[in-house]
Length: 125
Image 1 (cartoon, rainbow, N blue to C red):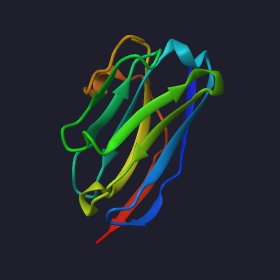
Image 2 (cartoon, one colour):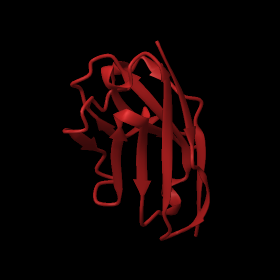
Image 3 (cartoon, rainbow, N blue to C red):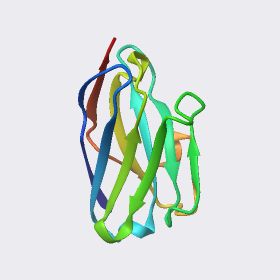
Image 4 (cartoon, rainbow, N blue to C red):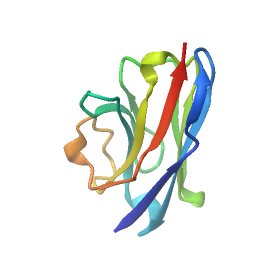
């Protein structure tokens, strides 16, 4: 089992940047593929980005491609989401998730076994 804690959210103006972190504890971090999802008020949770166990394979939603970068440092048990050129439509609670299928970069939230509590990102226009 793994416990996940997100941090780094906040309020930023449109065009700005934020870096989210997801710290993992428990079972070996490199045993898991990882993902970021987000949920805006009144909307369903949606896929943002995913990374396999080694960091060698990534996947992005079309809406964030070219603006967001997912990465991980297994030695630090931490995953990151660098978000640049933020838009008001990026406003949401951002969740990190872990999947035991370590080679996966799936956008399907049913793939993921463990979830963090979320961190709020608000982008003002």
